[in-house]
Amino acid sequence: MQSNVKRRFVDAYLNEVGDMRIKVNRLQLYEIIISAGKDLLISDLGDTEYYSFDRAFEVFEQLSATNVSEIIEQNRNGTEKIQQFIEFRELSESLKEVCMKFISPFIF
Image 1 (spheres, rainbow, N blue to C red):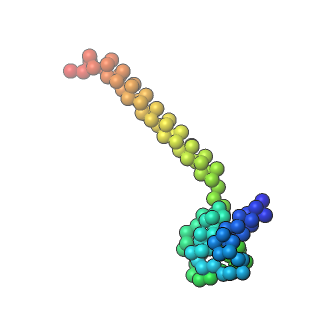
Image 2: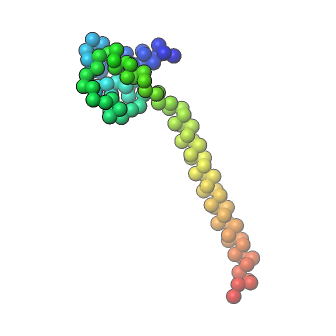
C-alpha cells in the first residue's frame, strides 16, 4: 500500500514540475497533494514558500487520505434516511386524512 501511495505522489510531482530535484511552491504542492488523492486546504501548508521533494512527501504523508468509498457510503445512507423521512411524512399525511374522515362527523 505504501508504495502505491508514494507512486501516486511521485507521478503527481513529476506531472507538475517534471523533475524531483526542482522545488515546488505552496500552490504546486497543494495541486500535487490533491492529484495524489489527499484533501487539504492551502492554508494547511503553513508559511513555507518552497518545498524540496523529500519535504513535500513528508507533508503529504502526514495528511489523511480521502476515502471516496466512505463518502459514497455516507451519501447513500443520507439518501436512504431522506427517502425514509419522505415515506414517513406521506404515511403521516394519509393517516391524518383517514382520522379526519372518522372524526369530522363529531366536530361541529
